[in-house]
Image (cartoon, rainbow, N blue to C red):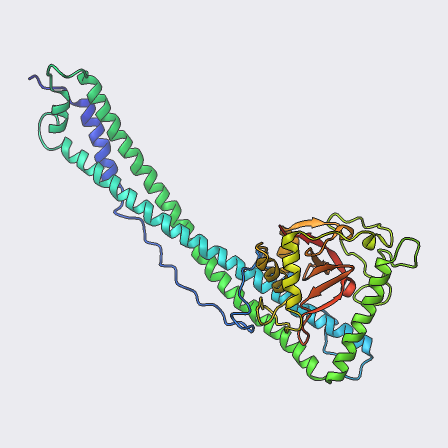
Length: 419
């Protein structure tokens, strides 16, 4: 049998061998991702369980946990209205700090998941690259084993009566196979390098968020300490009187809001935070901000089946204590109660008040039905579950318990509907 010219195969083999030799045995290893321990929380771990909704951490200049200028501790002998306002301010700071903490914790959870995914991709890519490298080495060694074609190629191009393949086509196919191996090696090396860089960035981000979460947890503790100190200066009788004052003003607002057309009702420009005159929506999210008095009570809407279950669960929690960061079943914060109620109804929603406002479908305040989530304050830092007839069930603040109150208990931001 005559010898077959080898220039084409020799050139392809040279490229293949160069590719094998040029590739490193492995990319620089990515440091193992440590299991970063959770920062201890003020709330009981079981009570604080639940996913946290994803809002990005705020920078120092816009930190929602930063105290307000007028947020000093109230003097026990101050007028009741002033005491109530200052307590509400202190609690608002604590609630915003808690929201920021939960948002950072959720970001950390997402980054940990991304780091784990990248680690798995790295392992798969390294295995694929090792397999391609072994194949390339076998092909290269076969071509340089000795004179003539490699044994497997000689078998392929041997002339016999059953062979229908042209020798030139077989050689061309062999060259193509070698080129494909080189391409796989090169693309695998590039992917490995990109994944290595991404994994390092994810690990750095994880460490950064771990530190940020601890700083936000410390801010929460500071704000809660301020609230506790303020409450410690007030007698139980004084606290009960403040609660009655708050609810009484909100009830007057609710009646005006629900009044029929033509009655002396509160319009959208009435008072804020339980002060006489009604509750003004701070933003509507689709709500008609020029609504007429009385449109809230014109026709109560029926809840969905899931909404009815959420309301039933939330009402069963009445009397349980408020605790910052708690998501049940022994204690709750505001978004912990709404999230847990809807989870018991079979619907998963974001953990934070801001996440619920941002991600759930918004509905007009005048179109709410039982089970909808009422969102309060311009920064959407508090939520409650709507019951109908202008009332909500909420986890109010430190020192108080889950309760049913008028929807006008705080300045309204809007409403959202899970499901």
